[in-house]
Image 1 (cartoon, rainbow, N blue to C red):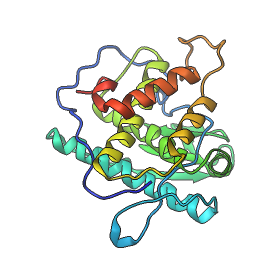
Image 2 (cartoon, helix red, strand yellow):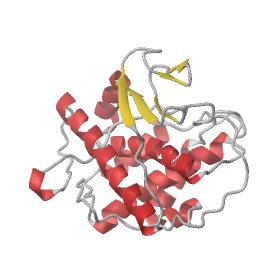
Image 3 (cartoon, rainbow, N blue to C red):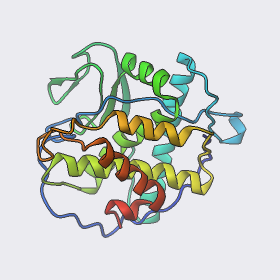
Length: 246
């Protein structure tokens, strides 16, 4: 996958109207419960090319580069969406890696291992680096871009004042927004997919769905594997309009 600055697709954000007040769950009381997933695609090619490419390796150095590239691409994408709608954009304050349970706290609550979250209280994304590297190597590098895109979407939901009654609604919209960010970036030429990247997205999404027996209305529900995959690819194919934005 590759990333070229300043050419993302433009989704309508101004005039967004969302009914309902949110319940806790994804980022409610402070943080997004996250999901067992991580890996990502793009990586920087020549510095002057402004393109990020995945080369299929799984080194720690590539993992770090992919995290940086995914955050940079998401930030550029959302900055463009806000700018196109005449809105002021503020990037998520920071992205933090941690390796021990409780090492990073959100709203006074220590974050668990094997997770990635968006903390609305501190406006940051945090991820368990050991778990993330393992997922990166198991699923493939393209999935990291989805992971960071999903958490970044939660930050955008906060900025847009989006609140739903049930966690699952917040989560599936974030999946859709992550898909839109990636699909729009590919269509604009800002991101280049390598062979197998779409399959990595599918495999990752299938791996992070809720247990089929979990009630959809339960706090912390993210959606079944099928629901999450459908939401992501709806956004990927149809952009932000398919996510209730615009």
